[in-house]
Image (cartoon, rainbow over all chains, first blue to last red; front, side, top):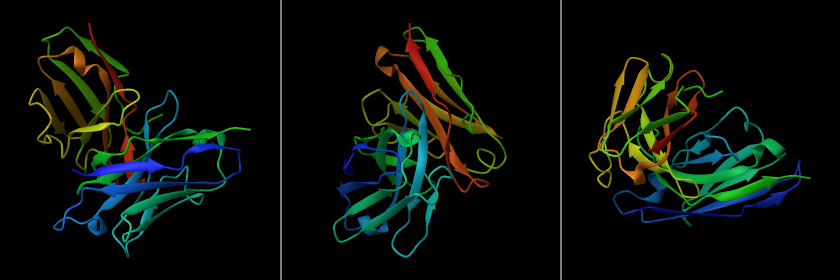
Length: 122
Length: 110
């Protein structure tokens, strides 16, 4: 069973930066992490789920939701089975729990981490 | 405002069948598969239905999904108290080039 564990959340001032990491385990030889599409999804307080972006297996492009395009960047280290979310120029509206997810063939989110809380406040 | 439209709330008595709808457009539901998630506050969301009507092995067959045109629905039969949660639909949107979610439906077992 795939397990995902996020880390790096915290309190940051508007305009600041924060980097979230997601450690993945449970991938198999036939279905290695290096072949996995990964995404970040967030939930702001009192709001619904919102897709942030996704990264394809190495060599493929990343895609981002419009609200974070140009400010957030997703990267991966297949040697460590990790995926990261670099968040720059943070805004108060970016306050949310951020979930790391493993993406299925038709963009379903097959596995979710427990979430990392990011609070943007002065 | 979410791209996919869900009713904000739904309810039913234990044992009853409840249906949650999800409405979209030709650029999302009309041309891509729909997936459903169950989310209990304070926990990680769980995949409930994928590819319109397929269930992960751990999900009881009380849960089923369907899609027609630009709408989809999640049916829960034999409602149980532990089914109380928020339910979200999602799909890929070809115009936005990204995943879109419904606003979520809070299910209450009366």
